[in-house]
Length: 313
Image: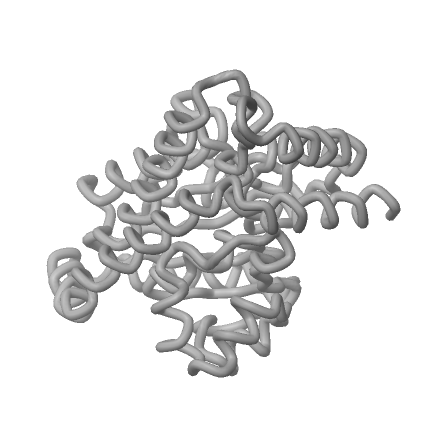
């Protein structure tokens, strides 16, 4: 749901009106924070038990290595696994390490009942006192580096979508090699509602995956897809009943992890090499547009209207 709010900071010296709108959004954000029902067993206890992991190394994710699989778990259930600036950096670091470790495949999933609710709107609140231009540049670079880690990842990368995927939680799936989803998962990119734009190369990958018309419906007009609809459009590889999702997917992944490591890696790189340069160019263009539009009037108006609606719920 959240779209680079950390970069939507008004210029205090030149845009006092925009500043008032941002303050209104912040107040509404505080009113709309809700508790999340936690499902701790959604991350398989079998996977985590007795596994070598780096939970103590990270604050927002957990990295588990077992059975030749490196699993990166987005673990902010109280925020529906929204991605803070720190979370972006941690996932980038974890992907860098997973690309160089002994694992055969890597997996990205969420902890609790969400895969990820996208960008954390609180990214802006803790950074609002900094230099605005520097802040926009830094946050844009952090997110761009995060996306580039997906583009450059050398091994098969599997997304286990255990629940709703919103914003960048959906768009990043176009850069994964396999996407397995629970039948309770949904997919939504509410960019236009927030006066924002596609990212994670989705302006390129989504039309290729699902066709131009459907991609426009999803990216521009905020259509929410069910897991079955996402499967029919090609965004999801396979859908599993939620009650057996963990069991069935992990059995599949453990089987994949017995394949020759170098064979899989080189084959993945061969398939992906055709688009790699294009994806980096698309990412660069998307992030430039997001940075340019950070303080636009219609973006701030859209944010204010969005939080006004949320505060009335």
